[in-house]
Amino acid sequence: TPRPRETGGALRRPLSRNLIAKPSKSLTALILAGSSAVDESMLTGEPIPVSKAAGDRLIGATLNTSGALAMRAEKVGAQTVLAQIVEMVAQAQRSRAPMQRLADRVAGWFVLGVVAIALLTFFGWGFFGPQPSWAYGLINAVAVLIIACPCALGLATPMSIMVATGKAATHGVLFRDAAAIETLRKVDTLIVDKTGTLTEGRPAFHGAVAATGGDEAEVVRIAASLDQGSEHPLAQTIVTEARRRQLTLSTPEGFESSSGIGVHGVVDGQEVVLGNTVLMEENGVDWHALEQQAEALRQEGASVMFLSVAGKAVGLVAVSDPIKASTPEALDLLRASGLSIIMATGDGDTTARAVGRKLGIDQVFGEVKSKDKDDLVARLQAQGHRVAMAGDGINDAPALARANVGIAMGTGTDVAMHSAQVTLVKGDLRGIASARRVSLATVRNMRQNLLFALLYNALGVPIAAGVLYPLTGMLLSPLIAALAMSFSSVSVVTNALRLRRVIV
Image (cartoon, rainbow, N blue to C red; front, side):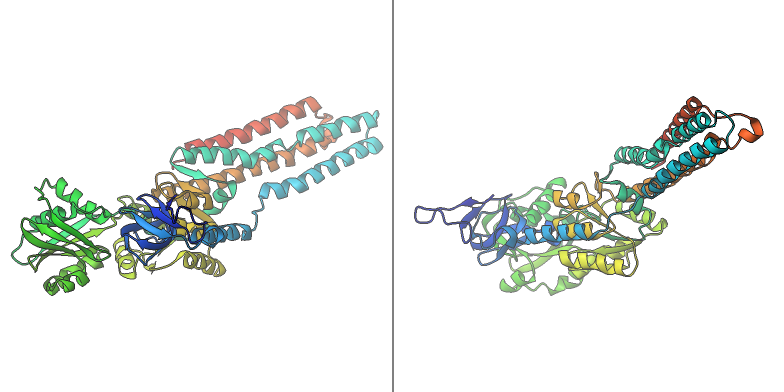
């Protein structure tokens, strides 16, 4: 929590309180002084930290990554963006109708049927059976009740669910309830977030381009030398790449940060500027010779920074949010299983479509907010689709709760995991394909169990009632009925345990 700052010897009350936010603290306020890079990915889906300075507003649940900020809290409690998202999640969860279990419906009628058959057996033997007719009627009625004890029917579903959830958990897939297992196999549309779901969710070095006659390694070296003075995550990414290449870095002098547009300082006795086109224009640097290369990198989904030395553009550096190595394979598996893939992200349209092209995703929605994702899920459901939503951020939570099946990345936020019915512990989308295989196998297994339980009772109850007596002269002892009832339960349990051998 940001620390209160004393004003005139006393602390102001919660609303309009002056605070100082240190790095790695959550924020909700208006910045009074200072500048920093703020990670808003949990709310917006944008992986690149956003530069903030005096006069900018901060949103609750975002993270201050570098400098200290003096700020004034303007919204607290239920007024904050985070609280509103939590309310949307709760509303979506309340709107979902409870799933009716097949076994519950069958069992309700089954019990009434068995009691009715037992009564008919008792009175049928009592009035029409050989002497002692009422004794025969009582014994056969008890045998009917014993052999039809709905143990097998009661075990048919929960045993399959228990074994399936255990099997899935060993492969990093956690189901929150049985409804998710039953519903996932019916899903025909999957909406995926980009940041942290399709991609790593953190900036990584994408590449560098040198101006004509320049050296790409030298561009990285100079940029990294200057960025040693910055705490910004993008700067640290460039420095890390230079050290990985074992480049010799110089010590920067006169380092200054221009909030939101870049940095400048002196490296090896020359004025160096690193930033966007606005900063280049402010310093009179002609960057247009590199415009084509910059646009090509942007089309690949990268953020581009121009580098100038002594007033001349010498190259550019690009940073991006890399696609997870497992994502292409995961999407191929999901498409092969008949799912339609849609990407919805808070990233800009250019970046979103670049990632969509790389992954072969045709339906891409960029610059979408939390409510937009929720509305997209609702719209698809209204069109008759069974929708699954996969995401990892706070901004995904309402859509995760609204979807027929919400799937959260275990590497994401607690809010997302609490809103979802399925959690992929490793954050690997291949887990969705595994979860669908488990879902299909489990429902098939449950149906087998239910079918066996019903067939067993369809055969056992008439025999216990004595229908074979006119042909064989034999009646079923209640002891034998009890043994048969136990055998049916063992058979159902044994069949459910076969799920442990399912290939996930």
